[in-house]
Image (cartoon, rainbow, N blue to C red; front, side, top):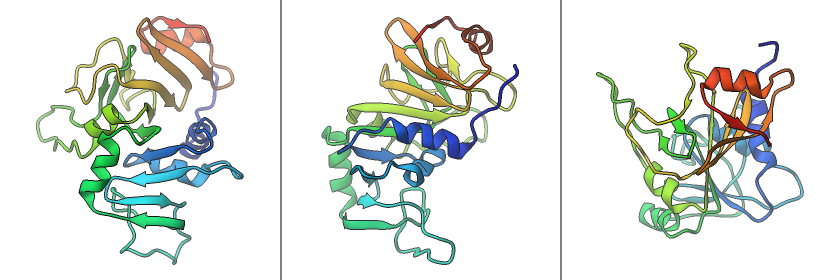
Length: 214
C-alpha cells in the first residue's frame, strides 16, 4: 500500500469541504471537533454542542482559553457573533426534533449499510458512555462518521456487520477515514474518494468488503 494517510487535520478539512452553506451541524467528541477549525470561508455554518451552545467558533488561540466556555467534550471553544447558550434539555430538543442538518461522530465500527457502534466495545473494563450519540444519530438529517479506517491492530472499522453494541441502525450516510471516503447504502459501500496511490481493490482487501465504484 504505497500511499500517505490523511492527517487528522487533513481529514477534518475533507469533512468540512462537504458541509453546505446554511447547515446546522453538531460535531461529536474527539476527532470531529477539529472540523470547526477548517470550515470554508464565505459561507455560514452554525455549530451546535449538546451541552447547550449554538454558534460555536474554532478552538481558541493558546492562552485565550475560557474554561467557562466549553463544548460537550469539556474542550474550550469560542463563540461566534450571535451565538447563544441554553438549557441542556433545549439542546436535546434540537437534536431529537430534526433541527440539525448534519452530525459528525466518531465510531468504533460502522457497517456497510450504515449501522453505527460508537458508545461501547463491550470489553471488560470498558466504561460505556453513550452521551447524546443515539439522539444525534437518529435525530440529525444526516449522520457522518469520522475515524481511522483501521484499528491499531490493523482490523477494519468498516465491517459487514457490527459486533459492538449498536448506537443506531442504518443511520450513517458517509464515513470519512484517513484512507478513503465512503457512502453507506442499502446495497453496501460505495467509494467517494481515496488518498492518492490507493486503489479500490486495495481498499476491498483492507476492509474485506465489496466496494462499489464512485
